[in-house]
Length: 439
Image 1 (cartoon, rainbow, N blue to C red):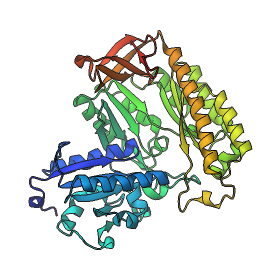
Image 2 (cartoon, rainbow, N blue to C red; image 1 turned 180 degrees about the vertical axis):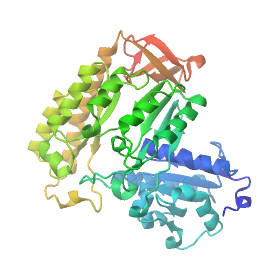
Image 3 (cartoon, rainbow, N blue to C red; image 1 turned 60 degrees about the vertical axis):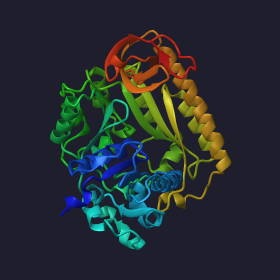
Image 4 (cartoon, helix red, strand yellow; image 1 turned 135 degrees about the horizontal axis):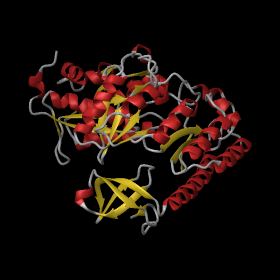
């Protein structure tokens, strides 16, 4: 039971590292604390409670989390620091030893944060082991829906969590557990509520959203059809979806939809079939190419972002060159390039061939060069076309920014009346530094 007297006049600060799914979950934690009388600390205030939601997708992510936790502890001296998220689940003892950490909560405990703080409040200096409340990930079966508003204009709706794929390089199943999801009825209600609060755009998030339905006997396509009927939301985006789960019925649906944006984010990870097998991915390059070509056939102006990992174990020079040629051949809009990082407990560690760090950097640069050329070409193709832009609140100098439905970033002179509005425009040319288009 929560003793609300402990939390009277308390202020909380929230810090999120990693994916949009984490942002959605931090928002839910924040609402829980707010409902119990804990207000969000203003930017210049010292917080009484700090909640740090962490990422552990790479070794660099772990390092950034450690640095952030130490910085937060110094920024809020005396605050009760709670660490949650993937890093907390995977390496709780390591996290508990970071100076300033008072409590480490796992995936199954983080939504009970007030109860856990209530039990630990006033116990500063306790042994590291006493700080840890982390259940084995196999025991985590529940799904907690979340919907957050970012610092701009979009809402992020968590529709699914966990993953059953166990790719050889990835720790996400060990951090987030098995695939599970909310019900369509509940998720539609959350989308409607976001729209009634003034939201215009929702991004559907999860770990493997195309796998939606494991918990409820529904399908991702069923969810899309239900959300299409939410009149209070003008635009939905589908976040990263596995190519083998991006069905033709989904593509045809989006191509004819009034609300779903022609914008796709699809993980490729490697353009070499041999490397895909080492990664234990569930598709090959012909399937991936067929999905991209089908998108272009149905939606010529769609934005297609593609994830690629460079330098994984087993990626020989020959395999990388094959991958590079395949990626060059794809009519995509942008690459998101990640450098492979060794993760403890993954099957990839049993692969003998290790790529030199300098070679990883060289390969990453070559892919980023391809990405830059493809993005510029895509933007060039959109000059002269008509779109609706959702403008954001943030400004830089006298400029404001927003995105078209097909995810072209737009710069315009600041007009306060345009914030969180869908403004019909015709795209002209590049801005001064040639990073966005203008109107």
